[in-house]
Length: 318
Image (cartoon, rainbow, N blue to C red; front, side):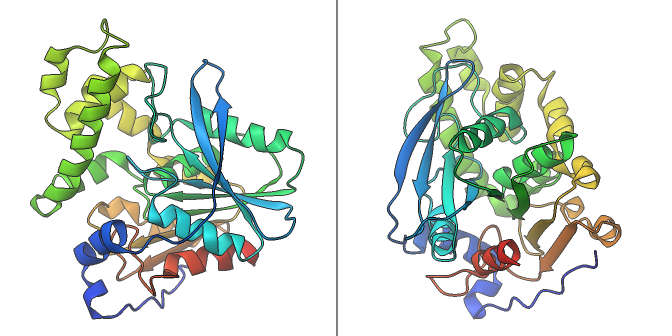
């Protein structure tokens, strides 16, 4: 599929990638949205929470929304996307990954960029409701990587899943970690690290044999967090093994349904191999739009409607 020529051209301050990233995460007004929470019990006796929002009339279509690293279903980008989808005929199921809904999860595991079994459990729950004939997957950042891996690693998946959208997606996890280590990204990686260290410390009392204060003190970078916690908790040799096996770039050629990927050139979280131009040119199912502006999940158009949100609705309703 040819590359989609992007027409996104925001007003002046939003041409700066860092401004658009920070504004969108911290300053954009949160939309009014009624969410209804449902707890999903997982096969290992852990749980995750799903925040539903609905159209004003019955809809046979639902979009599963997947947040980014240390996000949740109350983040502005999730609620704004949910609201515009609700207004355009889609119910939404916004997933809070394990440990992201305001409560520490129960198992030693939590979530990661490739933990597709939890996504599968969400999909199974939705199918059990026997209400929806069409399912779409919409992911942001880490959530985008997760859904692309889900679609590409399986020979088959439910035929109700028709399309998928990935926004600001780190298709190569190691490359994106290296990008985050740039000096200009200090504030972002520090914020992530503070939150991840808090969660590690909160879980220590439940798993004293696996999580210790001496290990906690070693967590001084995102790489060390993945070495010390993410990799062993989820069955990987080390952080690099985790990055290699879960990066979605390698799974893109196997995807059988239409997917839309929107990544901005000035997204400081992404490395050069997060823009698979040559691959998109050869794949009929891969719709790749590379905008000049947008930062990381920062495609400002108006506070009520972002460019990425409008494009998502457009793609899903085509």
